[in-house]
Image (cartoon, rainbow, N blue to C red):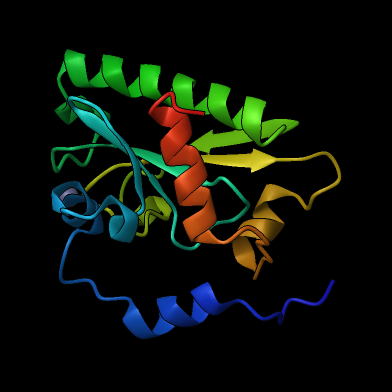
Length: 162
Ligand SMILES: [Zn+2]
């Protein structure tokens, strides 16, 4: 398996990655869901696409508030969080025909979180025969579906329009 492939999102990542702002607070406050890749806004949590996806349909569910740990979130937020993860799971299984799904959270930079102070639950669709998660996480992937297409598709699904 070659690991040097044309992967424009990685280039963008390298040139634009700054640690000054919280990208989740920025996305939560953004007036443009398309630019911030937000596909669903709930009362206390929201869903956005990962700009550097491991696979097609890689989404993240995060609290709207800047909270670093589950233990900082209210019971209402936690309840909405897991319900939204379940909804995202159902949509990905039905629409992306995933055979499996990696769901996970890294709390803190020591655990590998790219954004350590605002937790986010990753949902990474998986298909039989794709590479294993650790290999995928460590290298460059090819993601055929454009982010804008994914954004349009998942926004409509979360809105119940598709
Ligand atoms: Zn934040």
